[in-house]
Length: 187
Image (tube, rainbow, N blue to C red; front, side):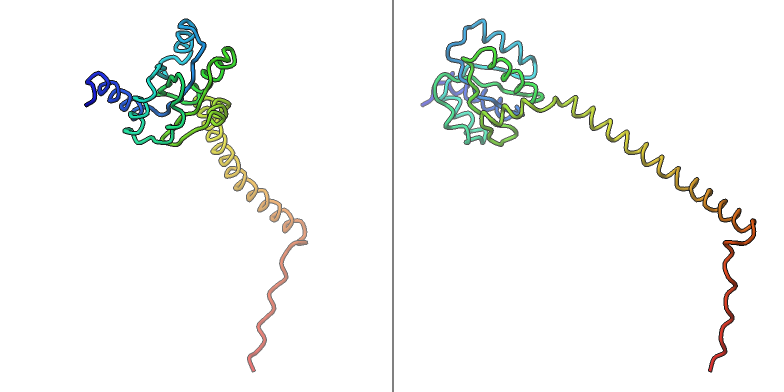
């Protein structure tokens, strides 16, 4: 029979897996408490970084429907449960790992899809959500103004063409169409 404290820990982690957008597993062997505190601060309010017990976390992940992480639960493990923008958290983890090589990114999960350590590093190379949204807004704003310019140009071009035809007709009929031939009598 499971002890109540372990059952509560599993239930809490299961809820974290279910409520987070992403979870990144790391190995923290060799990091000091001060370095872990710095890492938690760099993740900000966007993620919760917790040192976990492998067996309990594996059970919690499986209960949350995530069974792709089973191989990563070896050695000292900590999990960053990301509730905000996963790109920002991936960048914070990558940057911290560059400064502190003892932190090893093992892998993770994003919206139910397993990610390798390399995929998490690629995720960190993406621009933040705010930058991507700003670029999208700029593109969407540019398209209507371009369309408006095209729609405005069409009537003015039509008017210029009609004026040019009128001028041509008035200047000597060089462009007047030939009179229609009379229909031939039917046989």
